[in-house]
Image (cartoon, rainbow, N blue to C red; front, side, top):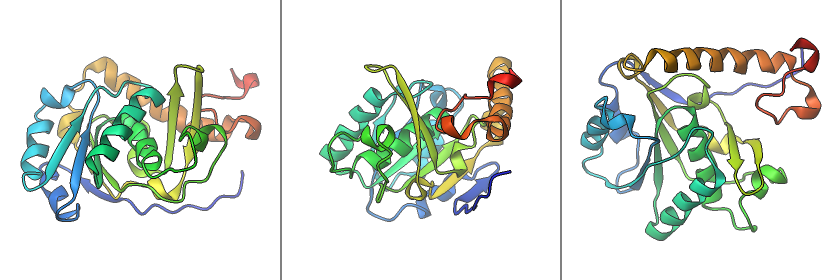
Length: 219
């Protein structure tokens, strides 16, 4: 087994009615961007709870983050954040929304050319916007780690980066929201979680940055 260091500073709120606590986790007066995916948060009641909790904040919404989040969509969010001078991000959904938010958080203050360099050239992240998470789809563990995987349509690349600057400040874990997921989505989440654990043991160091690079002899 490889040597490693582990540090997890993420504050976890687990259970029913925990969303109400996010208001005191975000600094007063911050301008907040709420990021989400296909819109399931409107069906399961999560959106209404978040809006109620953020009643005293200036909130900008950004939806449509796709599964396997893309650089192109993420950069659209970056433009809005810079224009509106957003201070804090709130990712709501599953691993894809959280991964996108991590890249967005790192890309906003990036001033050395194309933020894609963070992934393509392994440029270290030295600062990032703070963000929190409301998890509605458990699977990848992105709600409590410092890793992200982003795809770029124009180059057909899918790359990863990690940085202690993109640990979430907090994560709200909602079992009642997870309980509303379709059976197929639950199965997908179980497989995703299993693969993410196993690949840490079966992946070549030379392809460590690939999210699905399992050793060929084990396939």
